[in-house]
Length: 106
Image (tube, rainbow, N blue to C red; front, side):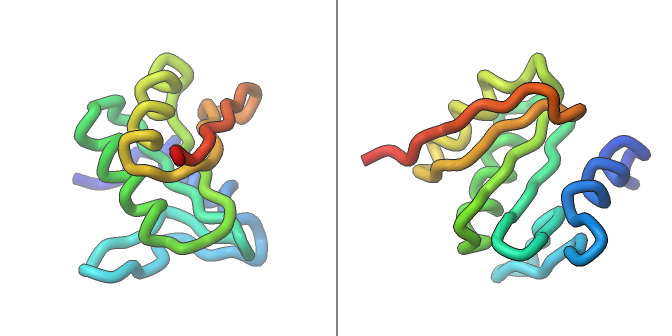
């Protein structure tokens, strides 16, 4: 299935001018965007399985900053998915007006 326009736009904005999109990860996977020390995944589906996979892709990126960008109604589920994947980072809504920090579990 092809990407939606909003997904492609969010991915390009996260990468910025110097970053890149579709960064290869081990196992044939791809990270949505990477810009210097920040890895970004955009997950618009809202499904728990999709959020979990996105969080695991962020964990595999090995970047110090990890951002999971989701629609605002899915922010709680996205934060839970990051906790379940044992990673800390930021959950943002699509416009970037709201963000939630997720602490790495000990």
